[in-house]
Length: 179
Image 1 (cartoon, rainbow, N blue to C red):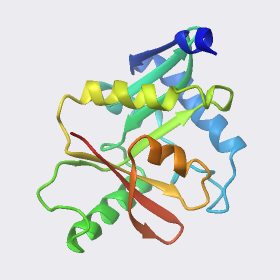
Image 2 (cartoon, one colour; image 1 turned 180 degrees about the horizontal axis):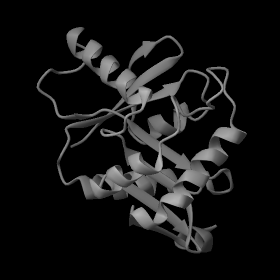
Image 3 (cartoon, rainbow, N blue to C red; image 1 turned 180 degrees about the vertical axis):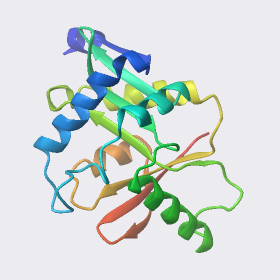
Image 4 (cartoon, one colour; image 1 turned 120 degrees about the vertical axis):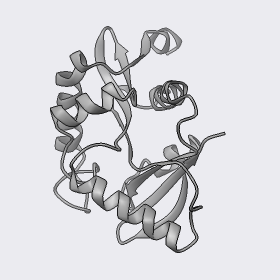
């Protein structure tokens, strides 16, 4: 396992990797159906080429390569035109209104992590998040994300520092405080 773990390389996301990111996104949604809906465990429609390009250019995308192939990514979606981002924006605003989140707080609205099933349980998510946090260089006080209440990976998210701050229907709003 140690030899395989050392073969992973974490790099900032680049537009040249977008076809591989789209493939990985499709693979996850095709193989992890969720009672939450037909989209699988990724809430909302998939990110588009244009969305991923803007996110990469904003330096809010980290990619994991294994044998020079993309096997995972961690990104912050503050830019897409997806309905999921609109939904996240509303959830965060509701939490601020309810006092669950501080009002004067720089929050990234939507974090997303995807790791190919064959590379899960290898520390990839942890390394991706660490790489992304290094790239962010203090731009945010916290990261927000959602996870389906049906998603079995919730404990793994919590081990990485994500905390449930609210529940809306079949989704938990998670927050990762940055120090």
